[in-house]
Amino acid sequence: MRFARIQGKNGAVVCAVDANGAALPVQFGDTGAPVRELQEIIAGGRAALGRLSTSTPAEGGKLLAPIIPHRNVFCVGRNYSEHAAEFAKSGFDATGSADGQHVPQYPVVFTKPAATVIASGDPVDPHTDITSALDYEGEIGIIIGKRASKVSRDDAMDYVWGYTLINDVTARDLQRDHKQWFIGKSLDTFCPLGPWAVTADEIDINDLQLQTRVNGELRQDTNTAQLIFDVPTIIETLSAGITLEPGDVIATGTPVGVGIGFDPPKYLVEGDEVIVSAPGLGELRNTIGVDRGHLASVGTPAWAQTW
Image (cartoon, rainbow, N blue to C red; front, side, top):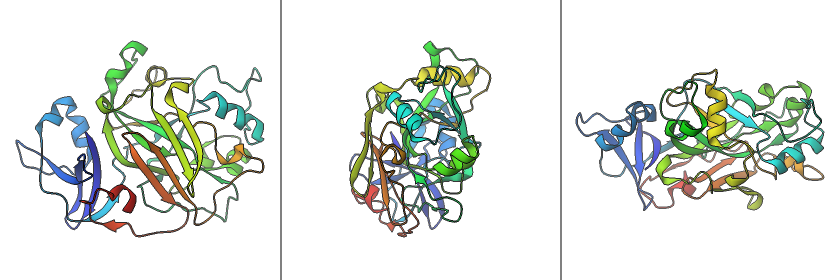
């Protein structure tokens, strides 16, 4: 199933997105209670999906991020070999590596505050007062479905509830100057997420084509089969000493084609539109520094493009 969150006149509601693009508010059929947060469904496990019922299409409202985790978004860096190479050559990687190789031996993990999460259609603040090297990173996000501690690789996929799209927006100069990644990746609005959250049964995470376009130009186009550390490895690594909780979100890394990979670099500027997409996960659309409003009828099949 595909789930979106809509801010309507009576507050936020979770909606199921049907095959025609209509957003249908969901409630638990046994209680009639509307679902306000995706975490309510995730916390109920797989059985919760069977308890859901839908009502008539929502009349309108603002598209929200489908989920905002209760704590930082976990992120994996340098997880596609070609991107690792372009990053190493860019001069912006101040972290270095002990063996001098651009492909990491172990997953490189950092975080972004949950407060950075914004919806598809929300504007990204370019923060031009503190950065002049704004970049995009299209990624697949994992949504954890149940408490995970010391999970083996073989069992890891049992803990995945679903997936979403993420744009790991980055201030490259801050990333370089501070010699760590947190500040450069954690400025306000730097984590567009959505437009939907999709249950794991609908996505083949081992064969998913991830693309990023800037103003219509295809910049990133890579299959998840090229991940250095796949989803089971990421979950095994994190859960070895950090207990993952239902609703935690993990960004799996970005492929080759980010702005710093070009000569000269292609940084984002005000007015640019970035679209991250993958089959089944929709299109995550955000404009740099421009608020287009994004109020529309959620019943239109083209709603993912008009919010």
